[in-house]
Image (cartoon, rainbow, N blue to C red; front, side, top):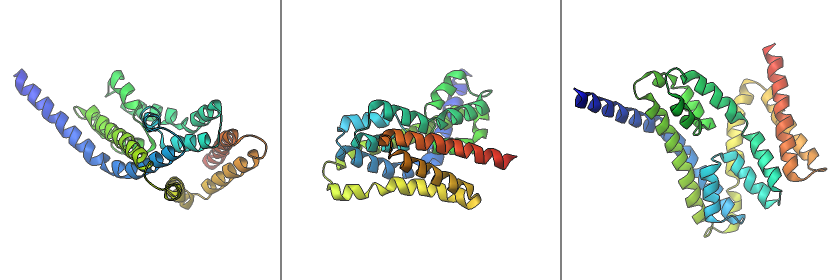
Amino acid sequence: MRQASKRQGDSQSMYMIQKGIQVGFPIILGYIPVALTYGVLASQSGMSLLDLTLMSALVYAGASQFMGVNMMAASASAIEIVVATFVLNFRHFIMSLSFMNEIRDRVSLKGRVGLSLGLTDETFAVASMNKEKAEEEKGVFFYATIYMAAYLSWVIGSFVGGLLGEVIPERLSQSMGIALYAMFIGLLIPSVKKEIKFGFIAIIAMLINVIANQFVSSGWAIVLGTVFGGLTGVYFLKEKQQ
């Protein structure tokens, strides 16, 4: 009886893992080219292969890593990089609280803590669209598979990009930096189509960054642009709700 139950549990675990791979595959396809670009740019900005790979493994935040590399290339101080990264990644607190609150009655505390470490913008979106999996037996394996697949694709892609950065001509690698801007534009345009105010928020953040850059270092200019751009967004969203 126990062996039959164990086999059934193992079968359900494998089913959830397979579903996780299936649902998470588009994320993998999206992460790899951006991770390769990060690895190439980080390598040619002076970071060692070990450092840029560890940054992906420990920080695991694409936008912040690109920003960090650019700030290091601009000789920004460590405190500027840390503060800018913290501000840019603050949304992860909100995402974690939101999703973990949805599954708190169906996933153990240990499971929720582990899952929270793998949340990114993309995995949060996919997991939120599949919240019903938490109610199924072994549902935690579904989410863990998505998060692990995304994480490994980002770290491995960064490592391979670091290797390529040593052989790709610098002129070619600099053109790859457009991948980050293309990604942000791709995320912004759908929002602007729904509500033009999102476009104004982006423009305001850009202008604050440009103006602040005349008085403070580029690192603090990024921090100010992010903070005040975000506060502008809060005002517009609040006004919309009213």
